[in-house]
Image 1: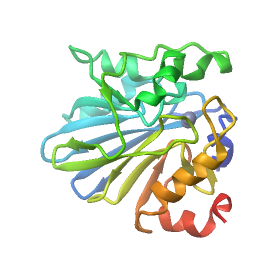
Image 2 (image 1 turned 180 degrees about the vertical axis):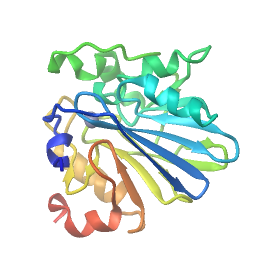
Image 3 (image 1 turned 60 degrees about the vertical axis):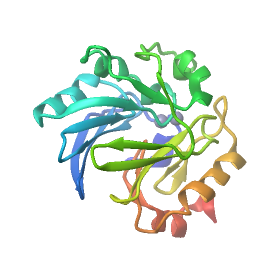
Length: 235
Ligand SMILES: [Zn+2]
Ligand SMILES: [Zn+2]
């Protein structure tokens, strides 16, 4: 069992490539754990249309593309929760599968970080960040995937332009590195701020129903209710 607090702090370098599949009403979610810090990537699809989106293609984009092809899905967009390198290292290989390349969505406040290779150089790495983001995400914006709607929730504190994707119908929040099971995102990297992060969690996560599933950027899934009761950072 890997401690998500450690993973969330980018401190754990280990084996990866774990894949699992879950159905939430009409939304099918395939989760992949990929890359040097075991980042969760999510391939989500609307069952009716076969339209699919990749949230945070962390690494090894060919595995995500294969997952979509195997199911007859068409990847139409890449949505980034934020621009850290460990959430977009597979974007280039996912995008290159389509012509023109699959468009990438990001909050503009993370563009400087995206242009700095997501901070990879701080960790002695180089990455190809893929196509420049062409969809500006804004707080309150509604994104569509077939019959599913996702609300964009701006949640700064881990990075300035961090967003989360909330699907009310499927009761699921893709929360990136804002909150983990029993932990929160690190705030010591450029753009990080502890008080801002706690405020984001209180206003953008804890305001959701307790049975909302939290699909995190690292570690196992959890729920709003569980974190409300047990997360030591929220006492
Ligand atoms: Zn991050
Ligand atoms: Zn991360």
